[in-house]
Length: 152
Length: 150
Image (cartoon, rainbow over all chains, first blue to last red; front, side):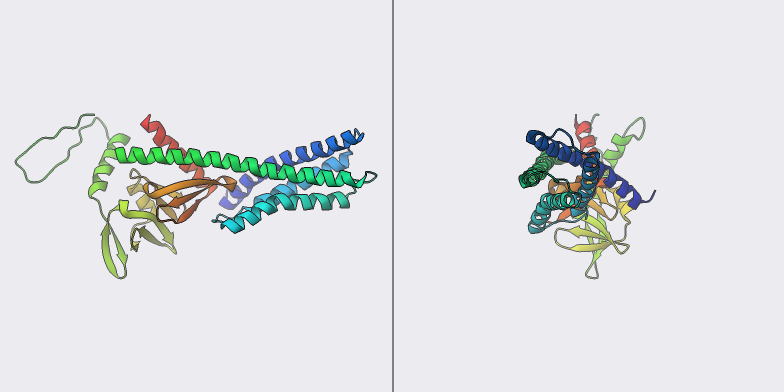
């Protein structure tokens, strides 16, 4: 199997995982908001559109950090901001195109988008905590490795 | 394992390893002893230099030529990366990409990055991205070393 295909397949697995997490979160946030408003159902089409949108968002997020290179602090900050903001813009556009908020007051859409933004920022934050934890573990192993080599 | 020194009248020093079989530990000892006295040759500014592997930050293959990045200079070496990888297996060198072998002792720190990659910062401040594939091997390499110690 070519290395490009392997790389794509590994990326696809990552993307699928995040797509599922995003889709479940999107449906729950939207559904809970509507539930509080007094509506107890979401149409299958909206759920399906959210799933497809989450898959596309997940790929977009993957592509933002796809290149194997060192990102400058500025570039990293911009990409990190896009990682959270672009999905919200995409959600807003998709919602308008597929009429998710038909018959609801305007604040339903606004609250939903704000909650989605908070959600993406939180996911980003959690990922950074995990990477920091992994960095500490790696550096601890590096320290132990160096000591073992000096001892030898 | 016993370490014994025998004194003789001969001027030439000799190291003999007595073992039942040449296992990994013996190979490691052999490589360490060879490494202590081993020098590599490289060409820099049309001059031939002799240097110890420990002086090298990393080896990199660019356009089918292998370069050794030393503390002060960059030398073109005649060894292939595969040969260097084998030669320096027990000396703390790690193949971190298709085109690069890193001296792990000269890595200042690691940083875990998006996409399961690792960024290694060398003592000279240079940064190297270790791809997901090699990052996995690096983790295994470091864990293996840790397990050996325990």
